[in-house]
Length: 449
Ligand code: SF4
Figure 1 (cartoon, rainbow, N blue to C red):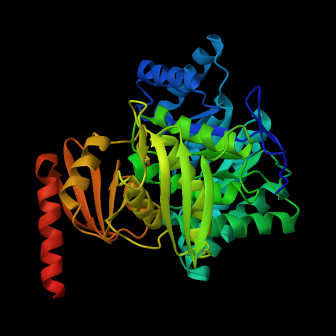
Figure 2 (spheres, rainbow, N blue to C red):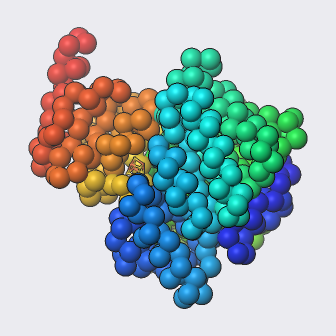
């Protein structure tokens, strides 16, 4: 899709045929200016084109202003985006001091007309200061007004975005980027496809920020992200990306850069041959590393599995292991493992639990990475179950979408456990919370028998 160019900060243009911009987000507490600055410097050195920082309340506005100013003084001109949830007043307060504001206008106010009025005010402030806006909607947190009309569907996501786009156009505001994220690759891809069509039809092709939200970590997080993002990029949809991982956010950048380089044809897949046996693809690779093989496989076959052009894949050939030794993909077991991971990322076959885990941000209330690892270890036998591990009680429950169980940090060493959208245990100490979760799951299974 040929999109409109949107300037973000001094040197970056998103959309309008410019190179794909790679984003990431700080997970430090924003009020800890030194820690956030240190993380921003590492991100910039790793090649981030845009850095997002959460602003939970007006109290953090001076901190993000100082962080941006210090980075600019150091010659680091990576645009800084303020991430806002719920509070239109915080968005208004921070807009003059950052390059872009990411908001979900639907959650500004439960009364939809009031939310519209607050968004209109924000547009005025952003116009005055040359600040761009990302309208960032997530599948798990659509407003009632839209789900009552369209259900909790990809169509509802696209329709909701179009309403806010309409308000921007009415006010002649064009510095707009849009995202429609979901942790479910099918939902996410369909939502962006619908939105791209609607934007083109309306003659307002604003650039799209593409990502799979709460993708988790490790191989699964990378594969899920590549499946969703590359499916769209390969169709010409997407101008900026964030690969969202529950890890050190600097790790997100090489995956984003791989996608950007692949789109720009600066890197190619290591696949050397492919043949079909019915609707199963058998692919032969010669990969320079395990990491490259994983990303190549996810991009080569994700879209075709999502779209049901293929029903399965099998991997052959070799890759160089960490010691540089040529290793057979099938004999080492890596081929079968990557096929299982890819089939699950495409929601075609579930061989293990489906994990939803937020990447964490300045709102995170506990050690998210270690909590996620503990939950994964304890629940690995629960194939097919959807388990969410979220960093904060403010946004986590709303963003868990279709999770069967949720494990949510409250702060102060406590965790809340959710069954679907309902909290079933609150204020559980972190050292007991995984055991309580397992007991609740077991009791629920007994009741169902
Ligand atoms: S759910 Fe996670 S990423 Fe989202 S605001 Fe809370 S801590 Fe941050």
